[in-house]
Image 1 (cartoon, chains in turn green, orange):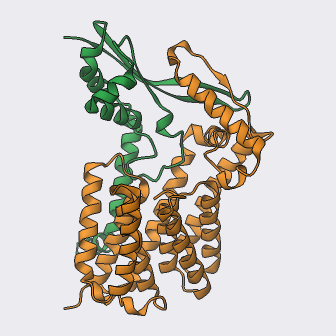
Image 2: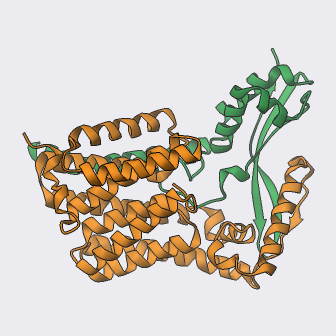
Image 3: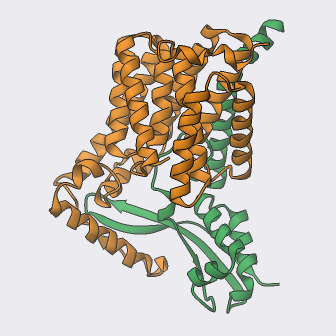
Length: 134
Length: 286
């Protein structure tokens, strides 16, 4: 037991690093976290999250204009580009509900899709959420 | 009572522990100032002032307090902005933790082995994340980065033709982003080089192979000159691909601690000072 504790203590920092990487890989696989973030050393392993696009249907004004006037919404869009999971999609839908012209709000996150043979750049849907206004 | 003063700062640059610690201290202050303080002129003045203060007063400072405060700030930042911080912020925290532990137990061998494992973990998972990412192994990621001028700026920017292609691709993407993705519109990019699809694919696998091989040689022998020769090739490779000066400074400091060769240590010191210069001048990333 003492030997085991000695090992844990001796290599505590690399073990912490491995634990953080395990959490990051779990977040990547279960919550769509971008590989660039979360301490998993996955920088430059996929398209940068700034290429991701957040789309909300039928708003009373442009999403960019709403972001300028509402920092909560701006921060949520920022988070959504990094972690496009259902919980974040739902939270943005709730935050932006007052700007929606429809009774159902659809929030989507898209990422770039490349076809290098044809040099085509298009976009594919990562995740979407339909929220019915209460 | 001796705390971090046991890293004998007055012995640098002859002693590699002290040299690495001094450079890490300077980097920590530059990183802290450049990521939190505005405007630019004040940022620059504070960075230069902190370098002078470290160099003049390094033997009079209570280094335990200094490192603990820095670790406290970096961990607080990490807690508050966990998914916003870059990977080298995590690396910086690990390195400071190891320095603090080293000064508690004075076990150089343990410190060195831990630094080795941290470098191996960084390289190994950097390669694994690339291998399991379809956008990377297909070469798509390199293709997009090259065609939008985000990679090899130092090399590609010399040619006006390529600059023009990059500007045109970037403007096409901006225009596409103004349209709703549900319309499923697409654009055709203009490759900056012929056969870029094949080059991107090869380059992706070359990167993975290099990272894996270096991780392996560091596991085998972190002191061997082949290990450091390859490590420096990787560092220079990253430098020419993208000016990730902050991350590169930390890798070179690890190199200083791991090598026993004076020549390699000198090279690492020169590189780390150069990379920090790029952060200060805002040419590179912090």
